[in-house]
Image (cartoon, rainbow, N blue to C red; front, side, top):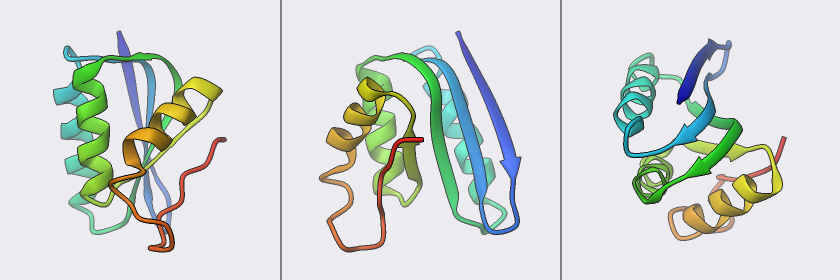
Amino acid sequence: MIRVTKIEERSKTVVIIDGQVSADCVGVVETCCNQARSNGKPVHLFLRDVSSVDQAGQTLLARLAAEGIRVVARGVYTSYLIESLTSTATAPGNGHHRRSY
């Protein structure tokens, strides 16, 4: 189960994910992020209340980060997971920072 919320801010679009990021929902997350990118503003993907991320979800998150979407998370496990997935996608000092909310 997943819930996706999109918030349009002046300087960015925030896509918020609650639930599980699994093979069943990676298409939904990817579509939402692609639609958010279409407005030309930076996209932030916020994993707010994510209980689990399977291998397909991890692959998607790493790919989105590599494509320039800023992926952030709340929670110790999810923040650690995002850090490990995106550390190779974004080099230190290039303007991409990950943080917990």
